Length: 103
Image 1 (spheres, helix red, strand yellow):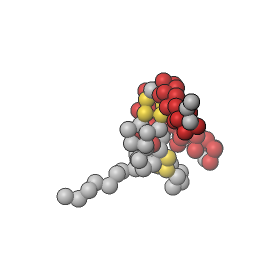
Image 2 (cartoon, rainbow, N blue to C red):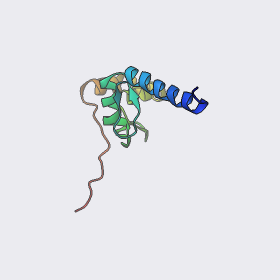
Image 3 (cartoon, helix red, strand yellow):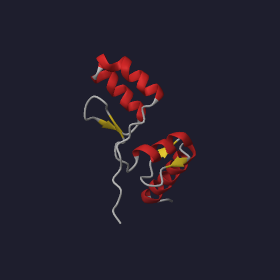
Image 4 (tube, rainbow, N blue to C red):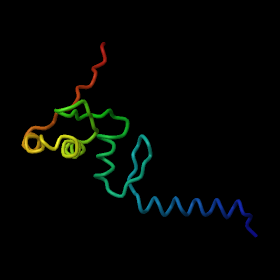
């Protein structure tokens, strides 16, 4: 007869097995699981351990992803939406410069 501890351990292994098959991609830094490779890649490139790269043109707000800046401008600067849409479509890659370590 199995003890309760062995049953619990088997259940934990089973849950991890199921989750691993549902979420095959995982961030190498924080181990957050993802169903899609592209979502995992975006997380690793823009979110995990990175500073907020995109600075608002109209205030001091900074966000991690380009689309989040678009949502910010729509909600906080509705009078600037049309102007921002044109900038966003063509050239909005205003990343905050990262500090370069001195040698």
